[in-house]
Length: 212
Image 1 (cartoon, rainbow, N blue to C red):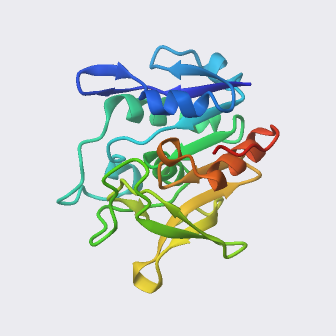
Image 2: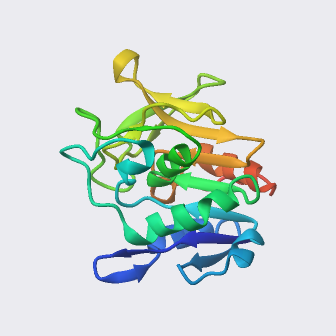
């Protein structure tokens, strides 16, 4: 099982956070995807992780940048423009934080550019809120390190989990069996939640496992 993780430039370095590398190694061999990675190599992978990072360029979903919107990441935006459209439906995609947002935008959805009064974790395993499985009603704790979220869900995606109620309800996970997509708004590579790990195993077609 070969997985790819998209690299980005951050704090004077280019690469992938070691937490993503360790998380990816739970499922297979990890390969770093850079702007020089050939399309043929990416399309031959068994899955690609789209990591967290800076905000998605608001122009991609037809909006002006808002007051709290951060500067987009050059590496991630390049991947999203040049490679992501050609990978959707061909390679299983795992979106994390920014990853869920850019997948939604690529498929025609939009984003809420800033969420006010949303819980924010101080540590990796700081489970600040419960999300609810949209099918079973099961609730479980997750961390939260984002200030944006899905607003309009792309037509081809199904909501898998949410947090909150009424006008304070937000999408926390989406998926598509047809397009082979699973994406979450929190960071499973930091809190290692069983729900995400099971969903990713199912997406990749490997035996389910529980990480203690």
